[in-house]
Amino acid sequence: MRIAVIGAGSIGRRHFDNLVSLGIDAVQVPYRSYRPDVLDGCDAAVIATATDVRTGPIADAADRDLPMYIEKPLAFRAADLAAIECLTAKVADRTMLGLMMRYHPAFRALADLDMSSAVRFSLDIGHDVTQWRQNWKFSESYAAKADGGGVLLDLCHEIDMASVLFPDLTLKSVTSVGHPNYNGVDFSSRLTVQTRAGAEGSIGMDYLTPQLHRRTIVYGVDAIYDFDFAAQRYEVKDATGARLIDLPLERNEMFVGITLDWIALLEGRETTNRLLPRIDRVTASTALTAAAWEARQFVGHITKEIP
Image (cartoon, rainbow, N blue to C red; front, side):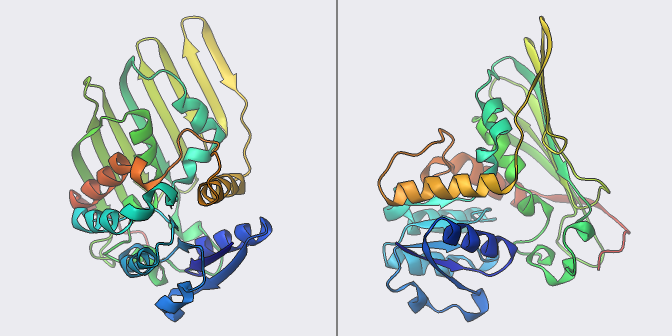
């Protein structure tokens, strides 16, 4: 099996390294060097480009009937989302979206719990973007682009996680905070959502907080689920008391797990995860992400220096 990895940023390099470590014949091509003929002779493709330029490589792979692993988010406009879904229709049963939190053992455990008694919930993630990597500038990254950048798209795993826990979400509003030097780029965004049963929730993400936080809390009539993914502390409280769930994680395990399931799809074998992010099974999540990006209302700006 030969797989082309399109994109040579940090995520593209991780995919390439993982494929090689799994014994796959992989070739990596930076987007700036990309030509459609690099896909010739390949059996599949990883699309790890910036979001605003990926429709072309997706179309090229689809023309060759190549299944794909596409990095999240799939698209940030409803029209682009519809076009990509049309392009990938023939290979949808073997194409995955890179929603790796579906392979986090603690989130998988949370998704197996009963959320039917939920009355409200929150999912939050954030970290100071200037601390993400050494020798890296926000201004030179895809994240600084008005089209395809910003925190809502960058950290949209929480939108997907909410869609898994509550498949019938309705988007109520999106408020965002920007930066005067980066027009159209959100540095903090908060979605308000509601389930069909009336439970209200918030999904928040930011580029600003000094320490990494990632926490999901669901308040229900029968139980409270408090999962702190940054601290790796997962607590369930109910009428009988409180209990902790021990589910340690090394981050790359999620990437390897999702890659192994994609390879299983390519080879026609059984997959391991009921939350499998096959592209035709994540439409509620991708639609919510695109709708949220288009619904952003900027309500203020920060003054922090972001080089």
